[in-house]
Image 1 (cartoon, rainbow, N blue to C red):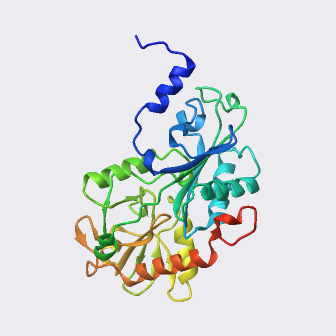
Image 2: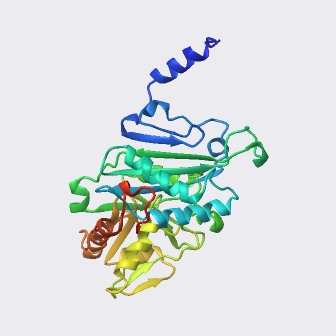
Image 3: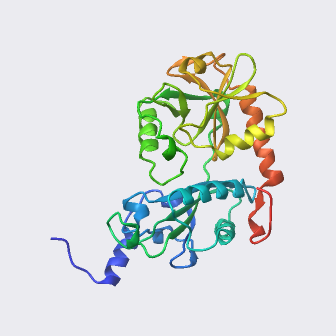
Length: 322
């Protein structure tokens, strides 16, 4: 039988229990407590928060570099949409959520990092009834941004088709914390020795990656984007298209698997790395098996955009472009 201990002993044991990954946590905020904390050992979410045991919550992950938060308002706008879809709102105003995001990131004392925001139904029970939860929860976590190694950009990345299907239409449009399909997709890719998984819908059309959007450069020179019928509309992809629309035609249409193999470039886009080239798919070469110029141009354009329009962490309550 487990030992029965006092509250003080339990807290002490909790603080000394080994946990992987703590070295990457730089700061966090729990709205229930209302203070910033730099000690990752204190980063604990109540088990009875429906966000934890029911996946009843939404999240966003943002990047900041050179002391500037990228696409803050775009991420928050999408989060508001996700929140409305599951009928939950943060325990404070969205304006305050925005301020807190910048403040918590600034408290980490580093010029670059990733910020994850979580809004949950809240603690209150282990059932499924939303009425158990008297107040929504808000958690903000800042963690280290680990850049891709040099060879990733020089040699390009690999991708494979996974058996995990694309999410149902309405669920694919909500960035909820229920990421089990995404986790299973990533597992398949890792076990096959690939960098990225790609999933397809029931009609055999390309949907998305585990945490990335995908687009192609066709033989005719168009940027081809899979329709968002069963894929999340990515903030990085949409900003990249906005910044490059004057230089190349953009076409939204269904994408077959053969289109991937026939493409001049296959590009994955995500918050942490911007844009990267897929040079092999299912072990087969894409074009000349080298990172493509469009992917590199997108990456450089996004990085330049962050420097010019990213929101300074020190801005706090000020208005800024993002």
